[in-house]
Length: 342
Length: 262
Image 1 (cartoon, rainbow over the protein chains, first blue to last red):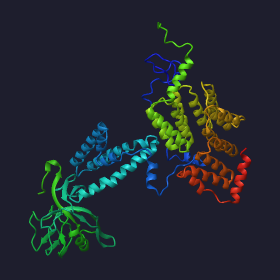
Image 2 (image 1 turned 180 degrees about the horizontal axis):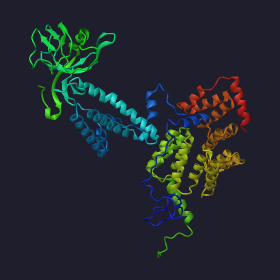
Image 3 (image 1 turned 30 degrees about the vertical axis):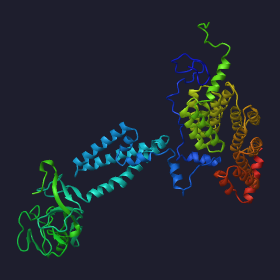
Image 4 (image 1 turned 45 degrees about the vertical axis):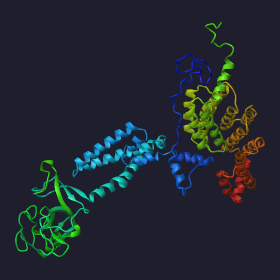
Protein backbone atom coordinates (compact mmCIF):
# COMPACT_ATOMS: atom_id res chain seq x y z
CA UNK A 1 0.00 0.00 0.00
CA UNK A 2 1.31 3.37 -0.95
CA UNK A 3 1.19 6.13 1.67
CA UNK A 4 -1.16 8.99 0.85
CA UNK A 5 1.19 11.44 2.49
CA UNK A 6 4.74 10.53 1.53
CA UNK A 7 4.18 8.00 -1.23
CA UNK A 8 6.19 5.27 0.50
CA UNK A 9 5.37 1.75 -0.62
CA UNK A 10 4.33 -0.20 2.50
CA UNK A 11 3.76 -3.91 2.86
CA UNK A 12 0.05 -4.82 2.76
CA UNK A 13 -1.84 -5.02 6.06
CA UNK A 14 -0.14 -2.12 7.81
CA UNK A 15 -2.38 0.44 9.51
CA UNK A 16 0.18 3.25 9.40
CA UNK A 17 2.96 4.19 7.05
CA UNK A 18 6.30 2.75 8.07
CA UNK A 19 8.09 5.93 7.03
CA UNK A 20 5.89 8.85 8.11
CA UNK A 21 3.35 7.08 10.40
CA UNK A 22 0.39 8.49 8.47
CA UNK A 23 -2.81 6.46 8.40
CA UNK A 24 -3.00 4.14 5.42
CA UNK A 25 -6.69 3.38 5.59
CA UNK A 26 -8.94 6.45 5.53
CA UNK A 27 -12.25 4.73 4.90
CA UNK A 28 -13.59 5.14 8.44
CA UNK A 29 -12.32 8.68 8.98
CA UNK A 30 -14.96 11.30 9.81
CA UNK A 31 -14.61 14.35 7.60
CA UNK A 32 -17.10 16.77 9.16
CA UNK A 33 -15.14 19.41 11.03
CA UNK A 34 -16.14 20.52 14.53
CA UNK A 35 -17.98 23.83 14.54
CA UNK A 36 -18.31 26.49 17.15
CA UNK A 37 -21.78 26.78 18.58
CA UNK A 38 -23.91 29.44 16.92
CA UNK A 39 -24.83 30.56 20.42
CA UNK A 40 -21.22 31.03 21.53
CA UNK A 41 -21.09 34.73 22.25
CA UNK A 42 -17.30 34.77 22.41
CA UNK A 43 -16.97 33.69 18.80
CA UNK A 44 -19.37 36.39 17.66
CA UNK A 45 -17.57 39.02 19.71
CA UNK A 46 -14.27 37.90 18.24
CA UNK A 47 -15.68 38.13 14.73
CA UNK A 48 -17.04 41.57 15.46
CA UNK A 49 -13.71 42.74 16.85
CA UNK A 50 -11.77 41.57 13.81
CA UNK A 51 -14.29 42.47 11.15
CA UNK A 52 -15.04 38.85 10.25
CA UNK A 53 -18.53 38.65 8.73
CA UNK A 54 -21.07 37.41 11.27
CA UNK A 55 -23.24 35.82 8.58
CA UNK A 56 -26.36 36.63 10.56
CA UNK A 57 -29.58 36.26 8.56
CA UNK A 58 -31.98 39.04 7.74
CA UNK A 59 -34.69 38.64 10.43
CA UNK A 60 -37.36 39.52 7.86
CA UNK A 61 -36.33 36.59 5.68
CA UNK A 62 -37.80 33.56 7.41
CA UNK A 63 -36.12 31.11 5.04
CA UNK A 64 -32.73 32.65 5.77
CA UNK A 65 -33.36 32.53 9.52
CA UNK A 66 -34.33 28.87 9.28
CA UNK A 67 -31.28 28.19 7.16
CA UNK A 68 -29.12 29.87 9.81
CA UNK A 69 -30.75 27.93 12.62
CA UNK A 70 -30.59 24.63 10.75
CA UNK A 71 -27.71 24.79 8.26
CA UNK A 72 -27.88 21.08 7.60
CA UNK A 73 -30.76 19.96 5.44
CA UNK A 74 -33.72 18.89 7.55
CA UNK A 75 -35.53 15.67 6.67
CA UNK A 76 -38.87 17.47 6.47
CA UNK A 77 -40.79 14.46 5.21
CA UNK A 78 -39.44 12.29 7.99
CA UNK A 79 -40.33 15.08 10.37
CA UNK A 80 -43.90 15.14 9.06
CA UNK A 81 -44.20 11.36 9.37
CA UNK A 82 -42.88 11.55 12.91
CA UNK A 83 -46.26 12.76 14.10
CA UNK A 84 -46.33 9.11 15.10
CA UNK A 85 -42.91 8.48 16.62
CA UNK A 86 -40.71 6.16 14.60
CA UNK A 87 -42.69 6.27 11.34
CA UNK A 88 -40.37 8.92 9.90
CA UNK A 89 -37.30 6.84 10.67
CA UNK A 90 -38.92 3.67 9.35
CA UNK A 91 -39.93 5.30 6.06
CA UNK A 92 -36.60 7.01 5.52
CA UNK A 93 -34.12 4.27 6.22
CA UNK A 94 -33.44 3.98 9.94
CA UNK A 95 -35.71 1.00 10.44
CA UNK A 96 -34.27 -0.58 13.62
CA UNK A 97 -34.36 2.72 15.52
CA UNK A 98 -37.78 3.60 14.15
CA UNK A 99 -39.28 0.23 15.00
CA UNK A 100 -37.82 0.24 18.50
CA UNK A 101 -39.15 3.71 19.21
CA UNK A 102 -42.55 2.93 17.77
CA UNK A 103 -42.87 -0.25 19.85
CA UNK A 104 -41.84 1.57 23.04
CA UNK A 105 -44.29 4.36 22.30
CA UNK A 106 -47.13 1.91 21.61
CA UNK A 107 -46.37 0.02 24.81
CA UNK A 108 -46.56 3.29 26.73
CA UNK A 109 -49.84 4.12 24.99
CA UNK A 110 -51.31 0.77 26.02
CA UNK A 111 -50.04 1.26 29.56
CA UNK A 112 -51.62 4.74 29.64
CA UNK A 113 -54.93 3.22 28.59
CA UNK A 114 -54.63 0.45 31.16
CA UNK A 115 -53.80 2.97 33.87
CA UNK A 116 -56.58 5.35 32.87
CA UNK A 117 -58.04 7.28 35.79
CA UNK A 118 -54.92 6.75 37.89
CA UNK A 119 -51.89 9.00 38.42
CA UNK A 120 -49.83 6.46 36.43
CA UNK A 121 -51.65 7.52 33.29
CA UNK A 122 -49.99 10.94 33.57
CA UNK A 123 -46.59 9.31 34.02
CA UNK A 124 -47.14 7.17 30.93
CA UNK A 125 -48.22 10.18 28.87
CA UNK A 126 -45.18 12.16 29.95
CA UNK A 127 -42.97 9.24 28.98
CA UNK A 128 -44.72 9.09 25.60
CA UNK A 129 -43.99 12.78 25.09
CA UNK A 130 -40.37 12.21 26.09
CA UNK A 131 -39.97 9.37 23.58
CA UNK A 132 -41.61 11.51 20.92
CA UNK A 133 -39.28 14.41 21.71
CA UNK A 134 -36.29 12.08 21.45
CA UNK A 135 -37.40 11.05 17.97
CA UNK A 136 -37.79 14.66 16.85
CA UNK A 137 -34.44 15.66 18.32
CA UNK A 138 -32.75 12.75 16.57
CA UNK A 139 -33.97 14.16 13.25
CA UNK A 140 -32.14 17.38 14.06
CA UNK A 141 -28.95 15.51 14.94
CA UNK A 142 -27.09 16.87 11.90
CA UNK A 143 -27.62 20.38 13.17
CA UNK A 144 -27.11 19.60 16.84
CA UNK A 145 -24.09 17.34 16.77
CA UNK A 146 -21.61 20.17 17.23
CA UNK A 147 -23.67 22.10 19.74
CA UNK A 148 -22.81 22.04 23.41
CA UNK A 149 -24.61 19.61 25.71
CA UNK A 150 -26.51 22.45 27.36
CA UNK A 151 -27.85 23.69 24.03
CA UNK A 152 -28.88 20.18 23.06
CA UNK A 153 -30.62 19.67 26.41
CA UNK A 154 -32.42 23.00 26.07
CA UNK A 155 -33.50 22.12 22.56
CA UNK A 156 -34.81 18.78 23.83
CA UNK A 157 -36.79 20.55 26.55
CA UNK A 158 -38.27 23.00 24.06
CA UNK A 159 -39.30 20.15 21.80
CA UNK A 160 -40.75 18.29 24.78
CA UNK A 161 -42.95 21.17 25.87
CA UNK A 162 -43.83 22.09 22.29
CA UNK A 163 -45.03 18.52 21.73
CA UNK A 164 -46.89 18.46 25.03
CA UNK A 165 -48.67 21.75 24.39
CA UNK A 166 -49.03 21.48 20.64
CA UNK A 167 -49.92 17.83 20.15
CA UNK A 168 -50.62 15.84 23.28
CA UNK A 169 -52.61 18.43 25.19
CA UNK A 170 -54.95 19.11 22.23
CA UNK A 171 -55.31 15.36 21.70
CA UNK A 172 -56.25 14.87 25.35
CA UNK A 173 -58.61 17.83 25.21
CA UNK A 174 -60.26 16.36 22.12
CA UNK A 175 -60.65 12.92 23.73
CA UNK A 176 -61.97 14.62 26.87
CA UNK A 177 -64.82 16.06 24.82
CA UNK A 178 -66.07 12.47 24.37
CA UNK A 179 -64.99 10.55 27.45
CA UNK A 180 -63.73 11.79 30.81
CA UNK A 181 -61.81 9.47 33.13
CA UNK A 182 -62.44 10.42 36.76
CA UNK A 183 -59.98 9.25 39.40
CA UNK A 184 -61.67 9.48 42.80
CA UNK A 185 -59.68 10.92 45.66
CA UNK A 186 -60.58 12.35 49.07
CA UNK A 187 -63.96 10.60 49.26
CA UNK A 188 -65.10 11.54 52.83
CA UNK A 189 -67.51 8.64 53.35
CA UNK A 190 -66.42 5.61 51.33
CA UNK A 191 -69.38 3.44 50.40
CA UNK A 192 -70.63 2.99 46.86
CA UNK A 193 -67.60 5.01 45.80
CA UNK A 194 -64.22 4.68 47.44
CA UNK A 195 -60.82 6.27 47.23
CA UNK A 196 -58.85 4.98 44.26
CA UNK A 197 -61.92 4.18 42.20
CA UNK A 198 -61.85 5.25 38.57
CA UNK A 199 -65.01 6.23 36.71
CA UNK A 200 -65.65 6.91 33.06
CA UNK A 201 -68.09 9.71 32.22
CA UNK A 202 -69.40 11.06 28.93
CA UNK A 203 -67.74 14.24 27.81
CA UNK A 204 -69.63 17.41 26.86
CA UNK A 205 -69.94 16.36 23.20
CA UNK A 206 -71.66 13.04 24.07
CA UNK A 207 -73.79 14.34 26.90
CA UNK A 208 -77.59 14.11 26.53
CA UNK A 209 -79.57 17.37 26.31
CA UNK A 210 -81.59 16.62 29.46
CA UNK A 211 -81.29 14.22 32.37
CA UNK A 212 -83.84 12.12 34.19
CA UNK A 213 -84.20 11.73 37.95
CA UNK A 214 -81.74 9.14 39.26
CA UNK A 215 -79.11 9.76 36.56
CA UNK A 216 -75.61 9.45 37.95
CA UNK A 217 -73.66 12.45 36.71
CA UNK A 218 -70.26 14.06 36.90
CA UNK A 219 -70.68 17.74 37.62
CA UNK A 220 -68.87 20.86 38.71
CA UNK A 221 -69.36 22.17 42.23
CA UNK A 222 -69.07 25.93 42.54
CA UNK A 223 -67.48 27.47 45.56
CA UNK A 224 -70.06 28.70 48.03
CA UNK A 225 -70.10 30.03 51.55
CA UNK A 226 -72.61 31.31 54.05
CA UNK A 227 -72.86 32.60 57.63
CA UNK A 228 -71.84 35.69 59.49
CA UNK A 229 -68.76 36.87 61.42
CA UNK A 230 -66.98 33.88 62.91
CA UNK A 231 -69.79 31.46 62.11
CA UNK A 232 -69.53 30.30 58.53
CA UNK A 233 -69.53 27.31 56.23
CA UNK A 234 -67.26 27.09 53.21
CA UNK A 235 -67.70 24.63 50.37
CA UNK A 236 -64.73 24.46 48.05
CA UNK A 237 -65.08 24.39 44.30
CA UNK A 238 -64.36 21.13 42.56
CA UNK A 239 -66.08 18.22 40.90
CA UNK A 240 -68.53 15.72 42.24
CA UNK A 241 -70.25 12.50 41.26
CA UNK A 242 -73.82 11.98 42.41
CA UNK A 243 -77.39 11.29 41.34
CA UNK A 244 -79.81 13.91 40.07
CA UNK A 245 -82.67 13.92 42.58
CA UNK A 246 -84.81 16.64 41.01
CA UNK A 247 -85.42 18.06 37.56
CA UNK A 248 -87.08 21.28 36.37
CA UNK A 249 -90.44 21.84 38.09
CA UNK A 250 -89.69 19.57 41.07
CA UNK A 251 -90.11 20.84 44.62
CA UNK A 252 -87.09 19.86 46.72
CA UNK A 253 -87.05 20.13 50.51
CA UNK A 254 -84.24 19.42 52.96
CA UNK A 255 -85.09 19.39 56.63
CA UNK A 256 -82.48 18.33 59.14
CA UNK A 257 -81.20 15.07 57.64
CA UNK A 258 -84.22 14.26 55.47
CA UNK A 259 -84.77 14.83 51.75
CA UNK A 260 -88.21 15.22 50.14
CA UNK A 261 -88.82 15.54 46.40
CA UNK A 262 -92.34 16.69 45.57
CA UNK A 263 -93.32 15.90 49.18
CA UNK A 264 -92.05 12.28 49.26
CA UNK A 265 -88.68 10.76 50.00
CA UNK A 266 -87.01 9.53 46.75
CA UNK A 267 -86.63 5.82 46.13
CA UNK A 268 -83.23 4.36 46.97
CA UNK A 269 -82.27 4.08 43.26
CA UNK A 270 -83.30 7.70 42.63
CA UNK A 271 -81.78 9.31 45.74
CA UNK A 272 -78.25 10.39 46.56
CA UNK A 273 -75.48 7.78 46.37
CA UNK A 274 -75.19 7.82 50.14
CA UNK A 275 -78.42 8.47 52.04
CA UNK A 276 -76.56 10.85 54.34
CA UNK A 277 -77.34 14.39 53.16
CA UNK A 278 -75.67 17.64 54.22
CA UNK A 279 -77.13 19.28 57.35
CA UNK A 280 -79.31 22.31 56.66
CA UNK A 281 -82.76 23.51 55.67
CA UNK A 282 -83.79 24.13 52.09
CA UNK A 283 -87.10 24.59 50.28
CA UNK A 284 -86.85 25.27 46.55
CA UNK A 285 -88.76 24.72 43.33
CA UNK A 286 -86.46 24.02 40.38
CA UNK A 287 -86.73 26.21 37.30
CA UNK A 288 -85.97 25.32 33.67
CA UNK A 289 -82.31 24.41 33.16
CA UNK A 290 -81.77 23.50 36.80
CA UNK A 291 -81.18 20.15 38.48
CA UNK A 292 -81.12 19.24 42.14
CA UNK A 293 -78.12 17.20 43.21
CA UNK A 294 -77.68 16.61 46.90
CA UNK A 295 -73.99 16.01 47.38
CA UNK A 296 -73.68 13.03 49.63
CA UNK A 297 -69.89 13.05 49.35
CA UNK A 298 -69.15 16.59 50.36
CA UNK A 299 -66.19 18.20 51.98
CA UNK A 300 -67.42 21.33 53.77
CA UNK A 301 -65.55 23.38 56.32
CA UNK A 302 -67.83 24.52 59.13
CA UNK A 303 -66.79 27.26 61.49
CA UNK A 304 -69.02 27.40 64.59
CA UNK A 305 -72.06 26.03 62.69
CA UNK A 306 -73.85 22.71 62.84
CA UNK A 307 -75.84 23.21 59.63
CA UNK A 308 -74.97 24.77 56.27
CA UNK A 309 -76.73 28.15 55.86
CA UNK A 310 -79.63 28.19 53.38
CA UNK A 311 -77.96 30.46 50.79
CA UNK A 312 -74.84 28.26 50.62
CA UNK A 313 -76.98 25.12 50.53
CA UNK A 314 -79.08 26.56 47.71
CA UNK A 315 -76.10 27.25 45.48
CA UNK A 316 -74.76 23.80 46.36
CA UNK A 317 -77.89 21.74 45.65
CA UNK A 318 -79.33 23.61 42.69
CA UNK A 319 -76.95 22.88 39.80
CA UNK A 320 -77.30 24.75 36.50
CA UNK A 321 -77.43 22.61 33.37
CA UNK A 322 -74.06 23.98 32.22
CA UNK A 323 -72.33 22.59 35.30
CA UNK A 324 -73.40 19.02 34.58
CA UNK A 325 -70.50 17.64 32.55
CA UNK A 326 -71.98 14.27 31.63
CA UNK A 327 -73.44 11.00 32.81
CA UNK A 328 -71.18 8.49 34.49
CA UNK A 329 -70.98 5.48 32.19
CA UNK A 330 -69.24 2.90 34.33
CA UNK A 331 -66.61 2.18 36.92
CA UNK A 332 -63.33 1.18 35.30
CA UNK A 333 -61.18 0.79 38.39
CA UNK A 334 -60.69 -1.39 40.32
CA UNK A 335 -61.11 -4.10 37.71
CA UNK A 336 -62.81 -6.33 40.30
CA UNK A 337 -65.71 -3.83 40.48
CA UNK A 338 -65.74 -2.97 36.77
CA UNK A 339 -69.19 -2.13 35.41
CA UNK A 340 -72.22 0.09 36.01
CA UNK A 341 -72.54 1.67 39.43
CA UNK A 342 -75.49 0.23 41.31
CA UNK B 1 14.90 -11.16 -15.74
CA UNK B 2 13.02 -9.62 -12.85
CA UNK B 3 14.82 -10.45 -9.65
CA UNK B 4 13.32 -10.72 -6.17
CA UNK B 5 14.44 -7.18 -5.37
CA UNK B 6 13.10 -5.68 -8.55
CA UNK B 7 10.34 -3.80 -6.71
CA UNK B 8 12.63 -2.21 -4.17
CA UNK B 9 13.26 1.48 -4.70
CA UNK B 10 16.75 2.85 -4.46
CA UNK B 11 17.28 5.74 -6.76
CA UNK B 12 13.79 6.43 -8.12
CA UNK B 13 12.09 7.41 -4.83
CA UNK B 14 11.80 11.01 -5.86
CA UNK B 15 10.17 10.09 -9.16
CA UNK B 16 7.66 7.77 -7.54
CA UNK B 17 6.79 10.34 -4.92
CA UNK B 18 6.20 12.91 -7.62
CA UNK B 19 3.99 10.45 -9.46
CA UNK B 20 2.06 9.71 -6.28
CA UNK B 21 1.68 13.39 -5.53
CA UNK B 22 0.37 13.86 -9.05
CA UNK B 23 -2.18 11.09 -8.39
CA UNK B 24 -3.24 12.79 -5.18
CA UNK B 25 -3.61 16.06 -7.00
CA UNK B 26 -6.00 14.40 -9.43
CA UNK B 27 -8.46 12.48 -7.24
CA UNK B 28 -11.84 11.20 -8.31
CA UNK B 29 -13.84 13.57 -10.49
CA UNK B 30 -16.66 14.47 -8.01
CA UNK B 31 -14.03 15.32 -5.40
CA UNK B 32 -12.23 17.52 -7.91
CA UNK B 33 -15.47 19.27 -8.77
CA UNK B 34 -16.26 19.92 -5.12
CA UNK B 35 -12.71 21.05 -4.49
CA UNK B 36 -12.83 23.50 -7.37
CA UNK B 37 -16.22 24.78 -6.26
CA UNK B 38 -14.90 25.20 -2.71
CA UNK B 39 -11.88 27.14 -3.93
CA UNK B 40 -14.13 29.32 -6.06
CA UNK B 41 -16.33 30.07 -3.04
CA UNK B 42 -13.31 30.81 -0.90
CA UNK B 43 -12.00 33.16 -3.62
CA UNK B 44 -15.19 35.13 -3.19
CA UNK B 45 -14.85 35.24 0.57
CA UNK B 46 -17.73 32.86 1.16
CA UNK B 47 -16.17 30.70 3.77
CA UNK B 48 -19.22 28.89 5.08
CA UNK B 49 -20.24 27.36 1.73
CA UNK B 50 -16.58 26.77 0.94
CA UNK B 51 -16.22 24.77 4.15
CA UNK B 52 -19.21 22.63 3.20
CA UNK B 53 -17.80 22.00 -0.25
CA UNK B 54 -14.43 21.01 1.16
CA UNK B 55 -16.25 18.54 3.39
CA UNK B 56 -18.10 17.14 0.40
CA UNK B 57 -14.83 16.80 -1.47
CA UNK B 58 -13.46 14.83 1.46
CA UNK B 59 -16.53 12.64 1.53
CA UNK B 60 -15.63 11.68 -2.04
CA UNK B 61 -11.91 11.38 -1.45
CA UNK B 62 -10.55 11.37 2.07
CA UNK B 63 -7.00 11.52 0.80
CA UNK B 64 -7.47 14.96 -0.77
CA UNK B 65 -5.06 16.87 1.44
CA UNK B 66 -5.94 20.27 -0.10
CA UNK B 67 -9.48 19.75 1.17
CA UNK B 68 -8.23 19.11 4.72
CA UNK B 69 -6.09 22.23 4.50
CA UNK B 70 -9.02 24.16 3.08
CA UNK B 71 -11.25 23.10 5.96
CA UNK B 72 -8.76 24.37 8.52
CA UNK B 73 -8.29 27.62 6.58
CA UNK B 74 -12.04 28.17 6.37
CA UNK B 75 -12.49 27.54 10.09
CA UNK B 76 -9.82 30.14 10.76
CA UNK B 77 -11.49 32.60 8.41
CA UNK B 78 -14.78 32.00 10.22
CA UNK B 79 -13.15 32.88 13.52
CA UNK B 80 -13.42 29.35 14.91
CA UNK B 81 -9.83 29.03 15.97
CA UNK B 82 -10.21 26.33 18.60
CA UNK B 83 -12.06 24.18 16.13
CA UNK B 84 -9.45 24.88 13.46
CA UNK B 85 -6.70 23.76 15.78
CA UNK B 86 -8.56 20.59 16.79
CA UNK B 87 -9.23 19.80 13.16
CA UNK B 88 -5.66 20.44 12.04
CA UNK B 89 -4.46 18.14 14.81
CA UNK B 90 -6.79 15.45 13.55
CA UNK B 91 -5.66 15.93 9.97
CA UNK B 92 -2.04 15.79 11.07
CA UNK B 93 -2.72 12.47 12.78
CA UNK B 94 -3.71 11.14 9.38
CA UNK B 95 -1.04 12.92 7.34
CA UNK B 96 1.98 13.23 9.58
CA UNK B 97 4.27 16.19 9.01
CA UNK B 98 2.37 17.40 6.01
CA UNK B 99 3.74 20.86 5.32
CA UNK B 100 0.48 22.48 4.22
CA UNK B 101 -1.41 21.16 7.24
CA UNK B 102 1.35 22.25 9.58
CA UNK B 103 1.16 25.72 8.09
CA UNK B 104 -2.61 25.76 8.59
CA UNK B 105 -2.16 24.69 12.20
CA UNK B 106 0.44 27.41 12.65
CA UNK B 107 -2.11 29.97 11.51
CA UNK B 108 -4.75 28.60 13.92
CA UNK B 109 -2.23 28.67 16.79
CA UNK B 110 -1.21 32.22 15.91
CA UNK B 111 -4.84 33.34 16.02
CA UNK B 112 -5.20 31.62 19.38
CA UNK B 113 -2.16 33.58 20.57
CA UNK B 114 -0.27 30.33 21.21
CA UNK B 115 2.73 31.85 19.53
CA UNK B 116 5.33 29.28 20.52
CA UNK B 117 3.27 26.44 19.11
CA UNK B 118 2.62 28.54 16.02
CA UNK B 119 6.32 29.09 15.49
CA UNK B 120 7.09 25.41 16.04
CA UNK B 121 4.43 24.39 13.53
CA UNK B 122 5.62 26.94 11.03
CA UNK B 123 9.22 25.73 11.42
CA UNK B 124 8.06 22.16 10.87
CA UNK B 125 6.02 23.24 7.84
CA UNK B 126 9.05 24.83 6.23
CA UNK B 127 11.22 21.85 7.07
CA UNK B 128 8.76 19.44 5.52
CA UNK B 129 9.24 18.29 2.00
CA UNK B 130 8.22 20.70 -0.74
CA UNK B 131 7.46 24.35 -0.69
CA UNK B 132 4.44 26.51 -1.33
CA UNK B 133 3.17 30.05 -1.11
CA UNK B 134 0.81 29.02 1.69
CA UNK B 135 3.63 27.87 3.98
CA UNK B 136 5.43 31.19 3.59
CA UNK B 137 2.18 33.07 4.08
CA UNK B 138 1.54 31.21 7.33
CA UNK B 139 5.15 31.87 8.35
CA UNK B 140 4.61 35.55 7.70
CA UNK B 141 1.46 35.53 9.82
CA UNK B 142 3.27 33.84 12.70
CA UNK B 143 6.04 36.42 12.59
CA UNK B 144 3.45 39.18 12.38
CA UNK B 145 1.66 37.77 15.42
CA UNK B 146 4.97 37.61 17.30
CA UNK B 147 5.71 41.20 16.23
CA UNK B 148 8.95 40.07 14.69
CA UNK B 149 10.72 41.49 11.71
CA UNK B 150 10.87 39.73 8.39
CA UNK B 151 7.14 39.11 8.14
CA UNK B 152 7.10 41.13 4.94
CA UNK B 153 10.00 39.14 3.57
CA UNK B 154 8.03 35.96 4.18
CA UNK B 155 5.04 37.42 2.37
CA UNK B 156 7.23 38.47 -0.50
CA UNK B 157 8.75 35.01 -0.62
CA UNK B 158 5.23 33.60 -0.70
CA UNK B 159 4.45 35.84 -3.65
CA UNK B 160 7.63 34.74 -5.38
CA UNK B 161 6.84 31.02 -5.11
CA UNK B 162 6.36 29.40 -8.51
CA UNK B 163 2.73 28.48 -7.96
CA UNK B 164 1.71 31.76 -6.32
CA UNK B 165 -1.40 33.41 -7.72
CA UNK B 166 -3.30 36.65 -7.22
CA UNK B 167 -5.34 34.95 -4.50
CA UNK B 168 -2.25 34.35 -2.38
CA UNK B 169 -1.80 38.14 -2.34
CA UNK B 170 -5.42 38.52 -1.29
CA UNK B 171 -4.87 36.04 1.54
CA UNK B 172 -1.83 38.02 2.65
CA UNK B 173 -3.83 41.23 2.44
CA UNK B 174 -6.51 39.72 4.68
CA UNK B 175 -3.86 38.62 7.18
CA UNK B 176 -2.40 42.11 7.23
CA UNK B 177 -5.91 43.51 7.73
CA UNK B 178 -6.42 41.16 10.66
CA UNK B 179 -3.29 42.43 12.35
CA UNK B 180 -4.17 46.06 11.66
CA UNK B 181 -1.55 46.60 8.94
CA UNK B 182 -3.96 48.19 6.57
CA UNK B 183 -1.39 49.97 4.42
CA UNK B 184 0.47 46.73 3.82
CA UNK B 185 -2.82 45.01 3.14
CA UNK B 186 -3.65 47.61 0.50
CA UNK B 187 -0.29 47.10 -1.12
CA UNK B 188 -0.89 43.34 -1.43
CA UNK B 189 -4.43 43.91 -2.64
CA UNK B 190 -3.05 46.16 -5.37
CA UNK B 191 -0.51 43.49 -6.30
CA UNK B 192 -3.34 40.98 -6.55
CA UNK B 193 -5.19 43.40 -8.82
CA UNK B 194 -2.18 43.76 -11.06
CA UNK B 195 -2.14 39.99 -11.51
CA UNK B 196 -5.90 39.57 -11.88
CA UNK B 197 -7.69 42.84 -12.54
CA UNK B 198 -10.88 41.11 -13.63
CA UNK B 199 -11.72 39.37 -10.39
CA UNK B 200 -14.24 41.18 -8.23
CA UNK B 201 -12.94 39.88 -4.91
CA UNK B 202 -9.57 41.55 -5.41
CA UNK B 203 -11.42 44.83 -5.88
CA UNK B 204 -13.53 44.06 -2.84
CA UNK B 205 -10.44 43.47 -0.69
CA UNK B 206 -8.91 46.67 -1.97
CA UNK B 207 -12.16 48.48 -1.18
CA UNK B 208 -12.06 47.14 2.38
CA UNK B 209 -8.53 48.43 2.84
CA UNK B 210 -9.42 51.82 1.37
CA UNK B 211 -12.46 52.11 3.60
CA UNK B 212 -10.37 51.26 6.68
CA UNK B 213 -7.89 53.96 5.69
CA UNK B 214 -10.67 56.47 5.18
CA UNK B 215 -10.43 56.73 1.39
CA UNK B 216 -14.18 56.58 1.04
CA UNK B 217 -14.39 57.74 -2.56
CA UNK B 218 -11.74 55.22 -3.62
CA UNK B 219 -13.48 52.49 -1.63
CA UNK B 220 -16.76 53.33 -3.31
CA UNK B 221 -15.08 53.07 -6.69
CA UNK B 222 -13.47 49.73 -5.77
CA UNK B 223 -16.74 48.25 -4.57
CA UNK B 224 -18.31 49.56 -7.76
CA UNK B 225 -15.65 47.75 -9.82
CA UNK B 226 -16.36 44.60 -7.82
CA UNK B 227 -20.04 44.87 -8.65
CA UNK B 228 -19.20 45.38 -12.31
CA UNK B 229 -17.60 41.96 -12.36
CA UNK B 230 -20.26 40.32 -10.26
CA UNK B 231 -23.46 42.24 -9.93
CA UNK B 232 -25.05 39.85 -7.44
CA UNK B 233 -22.21 40.05 -4.91
CA UNK B 234 -24.26 41.13 -1.94
CA UNK B 235 -21.26 41.65 0.37
CA UNK B 236 -19.99 44.41 -1.93
CA UNK B 237 -23.43 45.96 -2.17
CA UNK B 238 -23.79 45.86 1.62
CA UNK B 239 -20.33 47.41 2.03
CA UNK B 240 -21.25 50.10 -0.48
CA UNK B 241 -24.45 50.86 1.40
CA UNK B 242 -22.60 50.91 4.72
CA UNK B 243 -19.96 53.40 3.59
CA UNK B 244 -20.14 56.15 6.19
CA UNK B 245 -20.75 59.74 5.24
CA UNK B 246 -17.67 61.97 5.66
CA UNK B 247 -17.41 63.08 9.28
CA UNK B 248 -14.70 64.27 11.63
CA UNK B 249 -14.81 60.95 13.44
CA UNK B 250 -14.23 58.96 10.23
CA UNK B 251 -11.46 61.38 9.28
CA UNK B 252 -9.78 60.93 12.67
CA UNK B 253 -10.14 57.15 12.54
CA UNK B 254 -8.63 57.06 9.07
CA UNK B 255 -5.70 59.24 10.18
CA UNK B 256 -5.06 56.85 13.07
CA UNK B 257 -5.17 53.84 10.78
CA UNK B 258 -2.77 55.47 8.35
CA UNK B 259 -0.44 56.34 11.20
CA UNK B 260 -0.58 52.80 12.64
CA UNK B 261 -0.51 50.87 9.39
CA UNK B 262 2.97 50.93 8.04
